Amino acid sequence: MDELDESVLLPEGHRYAMFGGGDDYPIKTYYEGVFETVFIAFHPFLAPIDHSAAVECYAALDKNEVEQQFRAVTWEEMRRRLGFRDVSSIDHALRTMIRALKPHAEDRAGANRIIEYCERENVLPPGEGELSDLQKNQVLRVLLEMGEGWIWTGDEFCTERHLIHLSETLAADTWGMQHRTFFGYQHEWLIVPPWDSHFTLFCGNRALIEQVVERCELEGFYCDAETTINWSLSEHKLR
Image 1 (cartoon, rainbow, N blue to C red):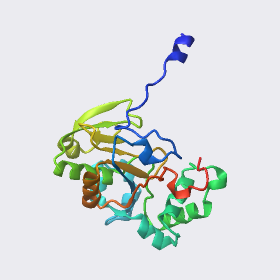
Image 2 (cartoon, rainbow, N blue to C red):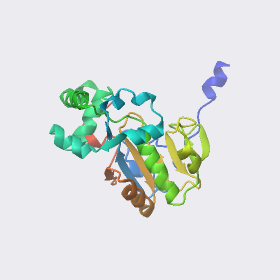
Image 3 (cartoon, rainbow, N blue to C red):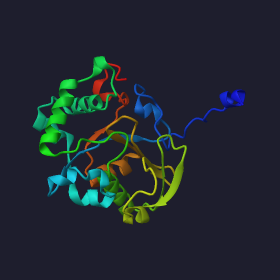
């Protein structure tokens, strides 16, 4: 049995359904021949719309209640409020907060600045490795308006995937499964959040991605040929 176990390896993942390029591997190189364009969309901070107590019960709220009770706070707004040099400093501090960096690469002072501000002002920092419920609802609604219906959803490496219909998913109060990755029925686009990252990759042809970015008012930037998952601290190894 041990010999059999050692010989059983997962096959290479489908690039139209996952990201497996590694932290220092150029993102566009990984998707070469599959997707033309990749947009890095920051996960926003979340602030309660009316009542600060919503922060305390956030984990118990369903996805539609989150959309009704919270608004997005951009990284640029937080940069101005906290005096960070640029948004890459926000990413650096957020990764420090979740202990995703090697000790020599941490920005503990920046992380503490975010923690103290969020506690004082009742703001939720972005989650890592997954779009927030607020963003999921917004993005999937736009995709439905753009004519998408049946799409695929799956786990990190898409070893498990399910076919879902956007109208039914949006109408439900909760997610039926762990919706981390979304991709087109014909594999023409992909939405995937890299592990331990506070951003999500939106991949597809340029016209489609530009439309999604504009209609969802996503904050972030388009990858160039050199952009990696470690874009915010390229001169150091983050892990």
